Length: 231
Ligand code: ATP
Image (cartoon, rainbow, N blue to C red; front, side):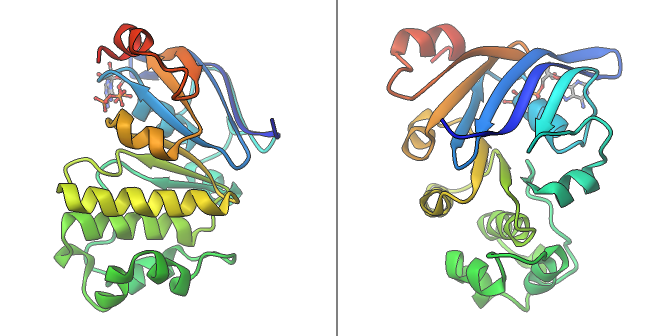
C-alpha cells in the first residue's frame, strides 16, 4: 500500500464535557476512497470535524502528509490540502454560483471549467444566487467549492442526505468520476452501504467513537454489518 496521507491515532474529542471520540484510529492512503460508516451517533461527523479542525481533539495524534494537525486552525488545514463538503452543504447564499466557486479557488487541476464539466447544471445556473438553487444543485456547488480549493484530501459528509433519488444518483456518479482520476483521496460518510460499496476501496466502521472494524466491502459480511452497523 502507498503512503498514508491521513493518520489518526487514539484520537479523543469532546463537546464541552461530553465525549464523542474514544480513541479513534484510522489511516487513509494516497489515492484511496475510504467510507466512514457507523450507526447514528457513532462519531463519523465528529471524526470529519477533527480532521478539518472545526473541533480540536484532546488526546491522540492526527497527521496529514506527515504534519501534525494539532496546532492548526481550520483555515490552515484547508491550505494544507484538506477540502470539506460539510453536512448541510453550506455556501454563500447571496453570492452567485460562479462567485461561490471563484471565492474558493486555489491554483491546480480544478478550475471553473473542470467543475462545470463535472456538474453542467452549475454552468447553466452560474449567474444565479446560491439561495435560489435546489438542494441537489446546492450540494453540487458545495462539492464544486471544495474541489476549487484543489485539495489532496476531500472530506464528504452525508453528501446525498435529503436529496431526491435521481439527484442522489447524479452525486454518486460525480463521486465515481472523481475516483477515476486517483489523484484525489476521498474520505466519505454516507448512510447507503450499497452506494458506498460502488465507489469506496475500503470502509472503516465506527462504534461508540472508535474504530470497530476496517476492511474491503467484500470482507464486510452480513454478520459484521449486523454486529457493527445493525443492518
Ligand atoms: P449521525 O449518523 O447521526 O450523523 P455521527 O456518527 O456523525 O451520527 P456524531 O454527530 O459525530 O455522530 O456524534 C457523536 C456523538 O457526539 C453523539 O453522541 C452525539 O450526540 C454527540 N454530539 C454530536 N454533536 C454534538 C454537539 N454539538 N454537542 C454535543 N454533543 C454532540
